[in-house]
Image (tube, rainbow over all chains, first blue to last red; front, side):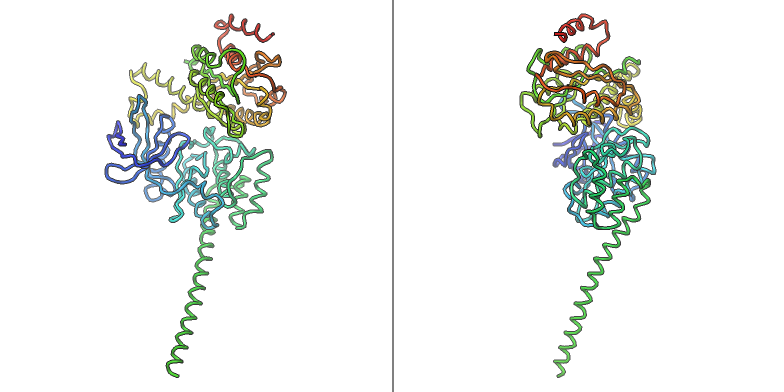
Length: 289
Length: 241
C-alpha cells in the first residue's frame, strides 16, 4: 500500500505494522528516497497535531545531535480513506522492542543506561516547562545490541501545572495514592522510579490499598545494587525534584559496571598472558636443554 | 456561545444484558435525538462478557453516538475518564469547526497542518473549558456485587480527574434496578463531589437489569424541564410502583 500526503505530496510505501498505541497505529514505511521511517496514523486531529507540535519543538530545542531518546520528526500530513480523513506523523524509524518485554530481565548496567537516556530526555522536556506524563515500558523502545532507547509517545506531553489527560494507573502517582495528576517534574520521575523497579524486579502490579509502602519495601529488599536502589526509592518517595540530581548517578553506575567488566577482562588477559610467557620460557628451556 | 459548551452525556456501565423493560438500544437512539450522547462501558468479569451483553453495549454506544469501551472493574475510573476525554475532544472540534465555517467558510481539515498547529492550543483549552452534565447509569444487579469495591475506588478516582477540569462538571448517578426491583433510583446531581463513592457504599445490589428504563430516567435528568414535563410524569409513575 502506498500513501501520498495531501499537502506535501510525499509518498510512503507501507512495509508492516509496528504496533498500536492509545491514539493510533504505527507502521514501518519506506520514503521516496528509499529511507525507512515510522508513520503514526490517527483520526484524532487535535491529538496528533499536538504530538507533532511537541516533537517539533523538542527537535528544535535539542538540535540534531542531542536528541537522545527523542525520535527525529519529519512531517505531519493527511490522507483520505473511505470518507475519513486520517492524519500521520513521519518520524525516524526507531529500532528495538517494547521495554515491557525486558521487565526483570536486564542487568544493572543496562538498567542504568536506559535510566540515563530517559532522564536526559526528561531533563530536556522539564527545562522547557513540559512534562511527559505517560512514561511506561510500552512507550519506550529498547534495542539490546546498541542499548539505544527511544520514547515513542508524546501525545500526553503537558505544560507544567496542567491537568494530565493521559496516564496509566501502574505508573501514575495518583493511582498509588501519592499525589495529584497536575503535571510536575516529580510525576515523571515517579513513573521512572516504577519503570526502573520493574526493569530490575519484574513487571509491576496495579496498586491496591497501601500499595506504595509495600512497593517501596519490595524495592528496598529486592534491588541489590545500592545506587540503583537509592534512586528508585527516592523517585517513588518523590524526593527527587530535578532530573539533574540523578543523571550523574546513572553515568557512575554505568562506569562502575563497565569498569567491573573490564577489570575482569584485564585479569583474564593477565592470566593468559602470564601462562603463555611461562610456556614460552619452558619451551625455550626445553629447546636449550 | 456558552450554551454550546455544555456537553450532555450518559455513560451506561453494565456487566450483562438487559432483561426488563424497554430495549436499551431504542432508548439510546431516542436520547441521541434529544442531543444527548450515550456511551457504554462493559465491565468484564475476569476478562469475559457474554456475547449478548457485548452486542448490547456496542449497540447502545453506536446509536447513542458515543464511545464504547470494555474494561476490568479496577480500571473503570480510568476508562470513564478516557471516555469523557475523547468526548470533550471531539466536541471541541465540532464547536470549533462550526465557528470556523461561519467565519471562513471552511473547516479544520481544509487548513494546512501548519495552520492547524497554531490552533491546537485553542482547541485543547476549549476541551478543558467545556461544561459537562454527566449521568452515570450504573448496573447494580446481582452480578455487580463482587465489583462493588472496585467500583467505589474507580468512581472516586474519576471524580478527582474530573474535578481538575476548568469547566464545571455536574454528575448524577442513576442506579438500576432501584430498591423496588423495577424502575430506577436517582442520585441527585453531585457538583464536583468527591463523596460519590460514599454514596455508592450505601447502595444495595441485586435484582434484574432494566437498562432501557434507566437510560430513559437519565434522559429526563439531562433535558431542560419544559421538554420533559410529560415524560417525567410518566417516569415517576413508573418508579413509584
